[in-house]
Length: 274
Image (tube, rainbow, N blue to C red; front, side, top):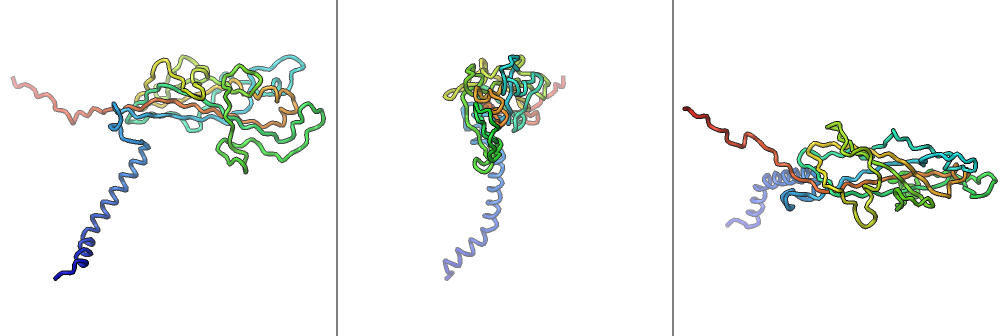
């Protein structure tokens, strides 16, 4: 009589190579799935449309003035801040937007946000003519730096292209350039209002825009103003202020799977012998 336990062990040893091979295949399939970064396959969504967002961040952006005032009484930001350059643009930190080789992207809406890091390397002494009191210099950190050790992070501000001159604001224009085809998708630069939807909703595009397969879009931003308002109108507070602004723009829409036509999978017509 054969011991049952011995038979189970023998059977497991015989199946061990197959189990290990299956595990290798499972791990390879999981690695490929992780590389796709897709939450699900296209055929699991209606009409094979996968919700998609391209998010791009710009910065750090220094203080920028739209113009310098000629009055002698003007000082600080209005006289010392660098002027906006209409011929200079900045590109996102994450690089260009690439649709990929399998799907086209349909742009339906967008939203834009501004973030601000604002510190001083000396006491600003607002209204005090005496020299500023030195403090531990801690410049404005990057938006992704640790908050305490490197003064990183930034505060969300609602004033993008806002006419309110009493509070901090960040103003910009954007142009979408198709690098592969060498042309702009926009008729010149669009104002920030074309992308800003606000805190509770997104800005719908007038017409859904399709970015075809293998498209590379270069979203160019021209900064027209970065101002902190009245606190930096004085020369002394302006000279000790360390300000860094950041802009985030989200292009919201969906990817559509492109079915590729393969001639090898079709029957060619048979020539007539007549």
